[in-house]
Length: 426
Image (tube, one colour):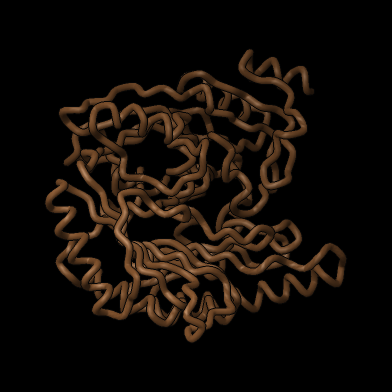
């Protein structure tokens, strides 16, 4: 059987090694196609042998979500890493899904341009970033990654290529397919080529940092900047885990505002932001040209579950209060209503320890989900130790689950792509 499968998959396939795992599930084979035609051939052969397929880019967040119910074949797209076209005059980029975001940004910077997607781990690829739908600080300026995707090419599970959208920024024909793929965790199709709209690199940047003693001062600072006509590119929060003590005089976190543009304009707006933060209650506000060390990175709480919290901006005080009560550290787009929360590390190994840890995480999720739901959002578990991930409800309530099941049935009726990794076992 193994020999037959390898023969059918072609020269781009080999037996998987010990490191070829998806959230702990080891694959039997790895295929490394070099172009869309080879992706289609591999998927057709996989369908003929009823193999479950998981696409892999840089592998930096392949452990997010639930483990797949099967992972017979890993489709490694790292060889599909080419920049197909950069139409600088039109602010359009065409690139393969396996292109690393850092390499793409270096190429674009040489032409004075950028893709307004940041906050990704080293090694992250364009395809993986789209598949997870995860955006960093620039989402406040440019919107999430789905808003910057204007064209997409995919291969369906049966090996059929499909495309939508195009190189024209105002073309809307492919928006629905692109948005559908964003955040789908690779459960609908394999992304092969992506088209993005770009932005010019700013001539100057200023990071205005307001230290805070705890969560109580954060909402008024964020609201003051968000409602002023200062056009910030990002308003980020970094708040370590409790205990917070607003009376100690020692700062325990920070609100950081980014302004960008022409040098003179940035200097004037940075001064205005600083003055506004001070009037709102912040002290020792600093203005620097470089970002702080925590910029765009998740909270550093090793061993603890990592969550994504979403909500409308008016819900920030409620969500921060719930995060404080659960002992979570939080960071992210305070004005955009997207935060990453890290719960305290789980208990030491052992049946009793794991049970206690799972109960503690489950209780924290109830509190955080209730707070986010009150403000139109959700709380999902991005990453957690296996003992926790297998016990708690990673995704939580999903009102549109019925619709998502119908979409999955249209794209992947046999559940061959990343089966079980997404909401409701999709």
